[in-house]
Image (tube, rainbow, N blue to C red; front, side, top):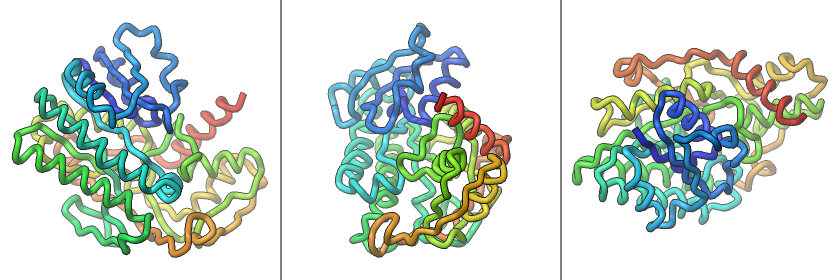
Length: 322
């Protein structure tokens, strides 16, 4: 099979490319390198099954050409990270909504199966849990740019669902919960690489808010295996799946665990959300996925625990800094 991966030079996309090529598939990467890095793919340059195209998902002619060449599409390209969404809300909304519309329309034109990556941000301020795929979305005011990402990804999901139901396009939707691992950077607010970088430099770790908010972290290797299985599972078409871990930890405890793992002399500094992001910023206090649905369909379960995830990120950042 030949797969197009939009956003394939990014953290998750590059690992997905590795996995697909290791399984003897061919891969076309489309990325504008705004947040992705070609260095994530450099080791694939001489592989005959690999093709990289620098370009934007808003370029309809380019997307049309590449979708036509592929047998299936993984749509990962998006403006991601709370930091980027808050600083560039209009650009982020355009990329996430219009870009997805361009890719979905091309997939429909050529009848290509497409997997759309959405996010746990979909659930907004819903602190119940574990969160099931059909649970309610609870959002703040639309005037708060914080919720623009959740809204944009919800539109993506609706578009994919409608294309499937009305036009018969085979679509699969996944909601990712805090994917972590090598190649992820802390540049856009990603918490574990940011904390690890601070700890390795013996700088105080900056915790936003009071640190009592909790998250679950899943290794990118587990995410990628789930994506590949889902796009190849006919029963997944027209469905949405949570992909995440249920190993819950508060952000304060996460920072302390990273300090212990790295042997760092770092302390903790708590920064109010208003100073970290913008006035009136709202966060989710708890985000834990229910993963029964994906487990039942493809036998998904996390294989890498949080301690190993932290160690893998530490090793990668140390190697990257040499």
